[in-house]
Length: 118
Image (cartoon, rainbow, N blue to C red):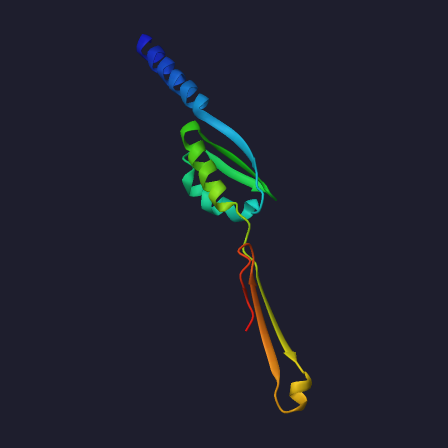
């Protein structure tokens, strides 16, 4: 009987220590929706942790030691997307009346501000 009581007490102490290590964090994303990050983050969460979310809010339940790693991954993935705008124009000018035509292409990328206009 005493042996069972000691085993039960040992299990309770370990469960209590383990429960204290788990932390639930609510994270608001700035640029990415939660549905895009959840499949990437789930394999990184050890059991019995979890990752869920909706719209731009993630709910992460994980160990304290894993939480910093998770936040680092989220920070690296939650970035503005790069946009690409391509404009093609076919202009008719005075030169086209003389037998030559002009055409132009403009390419701009999102945050870098690169512009190509031949």
